[in-house]
Each structure stands twice: as structure tokens, then as C-alpha cells.
Image (cartoon, rainbow, N blue to C red; front, side, top):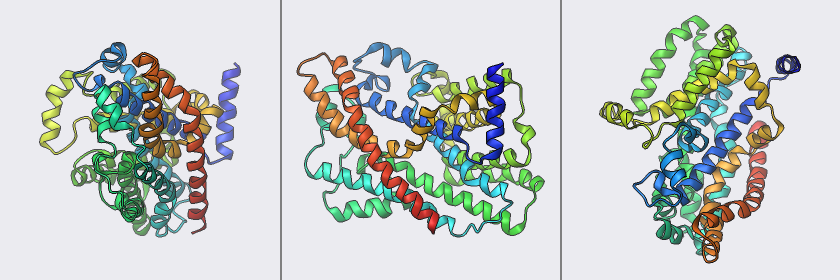
Length: 398
């Protein structure tokens, strides 16, 4: 009975306040999944290669099971994209397009750029002072991913400044030629945001009603997938569609609890799909998607992210669980954690790992290096978050 009252209280609170804290929690969980995934790639590379295995259970069995969703970093990125499309759109549908959308293009760049640029400059000085310990660890544990980071990076400060201010935002970035490989997704984030604003502007300009929009959305999705050659932007525009439905057709999100949990399980299954755990998928679907120019695994990740967002929006009990204060706080720090943890991993964590391997076994060294440097990472995240808050405040004033 108390749970029912809590859920009703949550619904009443949401009606009074537009902010959806449970979406922040979902974003926070996604950022933690990316953090775990990159540490997994760094120290247990047998999961995505033929070996060697440093922790056979983790690399051979856990990675090949649906539990892989717990550290499914690629899937988490698509969750970010779907959330961005939803959050950037819902306010305009609620207010019936009363705001001026033109300024949003520049505001989005101002909102995202400062913390990303700050992380680039930190990475630049790490490279300049020779604190790149990822290469030494990569030689010891055969991590192909660690060997990619900072492989071909200029030590010219002007190149770093250009990279942080312009390059990552207006051209695709490869992980083997970047100061911060995590920032490679920001090109998609910015272009996807611009696409959302463009569609919203066209809807506003031509006064397209709700029923007409529903007819146009499938056409938009097909065009987006065809022009982008993949599903990165598909998640963005599905987020926009869900926002429109959430405001103008709330009945679409009223399904029974049993169906919600079943759909949630399906979303988790799609998110857990990877190269190792579904050979039949790779055998039959891979050639089809590659022949169309799509990355074969981006399809289930993208669909899974959209389905997961739909389930969260449809389930009051799940919303209530995601209202946990710690998870909400993690969501507030999610962007800062996402953009800074890799450069910390490749410097501080790798340095600690090299120290501990002189005294302990491999797996104990991994555990110690991750857990004992975590407080330092949180301090770093806190500093980046300060820059992030400043960027938010500046963008709101424009």
C-alpha cells in the first residue's frame, strides 16, 4: 500500500514540476556503464578478442550473457542520444512552440563545449608531461583499446585548442587520433541536436498539427537513417517522437505492469548484444546491414535505447525507483564523468596498476587500481562539473 501511495505522490509531484529526475538517473546509470566498459576494455581485453584471458569468468562468460548490459558502453551512448532527443523536444511540445528556436543552435554548442574543451586541455598537459601510462599497460595485458588512446596526437597547443573548440564538433573523430576518445560522440550529439532543432523549426513554421506529424515521422526516420548511413541519429529522432507522444497522446504510455517489465527485458536484451554473445546475429544480420552501409550492432543498440526510454516513461514504479537521490545526483554529474574518465584511466589508473602489479596478482592489481583511484576520479569529475555548470548558466543567458 505504501508503494502505491509513493507512486501516486510521484505522479502528483511530476505534474507540479516539469523536471523529470528519473531521466537524470537513467543518464547517470548510462554514464556508469560507459565507465565500467572502458575499464573492462583496458584490463580484460579477452572479452572482445581471442585472448589472453585475465579473468576468464568475466571475459569468457559474463561478456557473452545478457548481464553484459551492466557495462554495455556502446548501448549506453545510444541511451544518451535518445534522452537528448526527448529532453530537447518535450519543452517545445508542452509550450506549443512558443519559444524562438533559432538561438538554440548556438546555445547547444555553448552548453556542451566548455567542459569538453577543459578535458582536452587536461589531456594535452598529460601528453606534454609524458604521463601516458596506457601504452605500457597495453603491452602487458594486450589491450588493443588502450593502445589506441593518444597514439597519434600532436603536442602543439594550437592543435589541442583547435581540436577542443572546432574539430570534435564539426567533423567525425577517430579514437586513434584524439586527445580524448570519448569526445568522438560529441559530433553526433551536436549534429543530432541541430537536426532536432531543424525539425522543430519546420513544424513551427508550417504549423504542422499532431496527426500530420505522426504521418511524417516514419518518413523522417527513413531519411535520417539513409543520409547518416546508420542508426546514431535514429535514436535522437525517436526521442523527439516519444516527446511528442508523451505530451499529445499520453495514452500511448499507459500499458500494464506485466507488459512493461517484458518490454524492459527485451530492451536489456538488445542492449546486451555484442560481437561475442550472439553469433547467429552476426552470421545472418551482419552482411545485410553492412551491405546497406550500416554498422550491424548499432541497430539493436539504437532500438534498445528507444525501447528502454519508452518503458521508463510508461512505468510509474520504475520512475519511482529511479527517483533515488544517489542516482539523480549521478545523472547531474553524468556528462562530466563521461568526458573525463578515459583520460584519467589512461594516466592515473594505469600508473596505479603498474605500481600494484609489482606486489600483487593481476586481478588484485586491477581491483586496487580502480577502487583506490576512484576518489581522485570523483574529484576530477567534480572539477569538470563546475565548468559544466558554468556552461549551462552561460547558455541560458544567451
